[in-house]
Every structure is written in C-alpha cells, then in structure tokens.
Image (tube, rainbow, N blue to C red; front, top):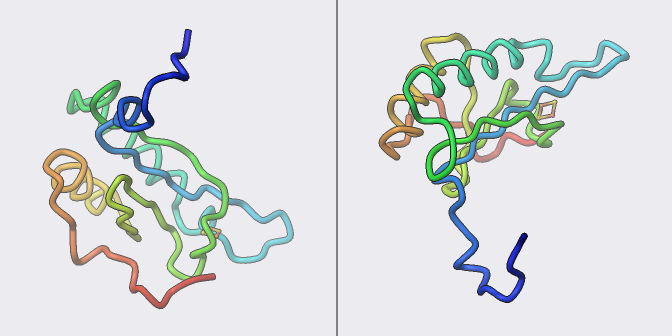
Length: 119
Ligand code: FES
C-alpha cells in the first residue's frame, strides 16, 4: 500500500536512472523515430541493461515512450534524472550509453542531441 503521508523526496529515487526511448510510429508514412531504428535501439538497450545486472529497483529502468517532440533528432532517448538527450545510430552507440551513462553517470558527449533540435 502506498504511503501518501511521506514527503515527496522520500518517495523519489525508486530507480537511479530512467531512460525513455521514443518508439513513435506514424501511420501515414511521415518521418518518425520508428523509421530510424528506434525499436532496435530500445530492444538492444533493454537486453544490455539486463545482461549487465543493472535492471531493477535502485538501478536502471528502460521504457518505451511515444513522441518526445524532438523528432528532428530521431531516433531519440532521454535519461533522467539528468534530462540528457541522446540520438543513436547503431548498437555500439547504445552500448556506450549503457556503459558510460547508465552505469557510471558519465555523459556520452558525441551522442548528445543538439539543443536547438526540436520537432
Ligand atoms: S517521433 Fe520520436 S520524438 Fe517525435
């Protein structure tokens, strides 16, 4: 049962890090992350996090998301609590995000979404 009387900060941090992948697919053939390997990146990240023993409470959670409104940089994923936005091309990019950021909190500069890129 949840305890609503606890302060918000006492309830924070169930996961140390949370990564959301945009898997948005547009039915009318319009450009979207799904057309640029988003699902493959998500699946690989999920697998790598699990293999590394990083998945679960107090550690890392990998989640699907809909459009994150930064389509111009797609495929995109965002890591919280830092709010770090990444783009990626292949499995090696995902490996680097897992090994560097999700495991050690070190941002992978070369994969950052340029701040001006939005929809
Ligand atoms: S379709 Fe992926 S961010 Fe919009």
